[in-house]
View 1 (cartoon, one colour):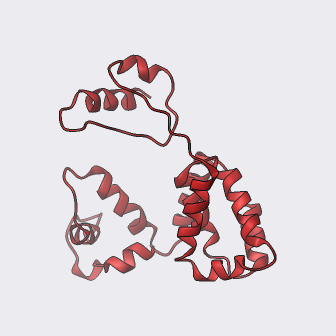
View 2: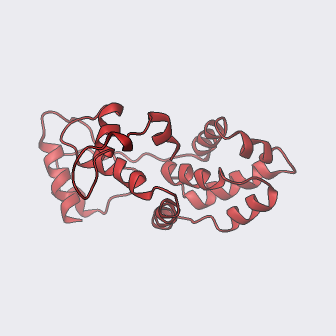
Length: 184
């Protein structure tokens, strides 16, 4: 909490950034640390999450076809609405979990095991990443994006990922395409 308060204090005093937002509810003490800030509550409606789901399904052809059967679209929608607790990122990550379903049986099992809440969803996402063939690449990209001192282009990011972590030397054989990185 202390680091977040310090960050908010810097952000609110900055001449560069005039607005900052968070998808999480902040504890009341934050208002005490930045009294000059205006706080605005943004309430996400179920219709907003439904729209997100519909938009994401456009790129998930297999899952979209499964959801056309026997009321499964409504079942998935109700489950994601309930377990995402109105958070876009959680709903999006939940759909990513469901993306790999190939049939109704797989979908039913995935829905039953779908984590609810932010912490459980993050834990499940990291567990899924660890099970991938290249978890280091999947974790390396966001690390570069979060810790860089300037905005990285996709090409910069691809080259940064191609640096071997043990020797810190660039290896052109580790270069990925943008499509490959985004598919991970």
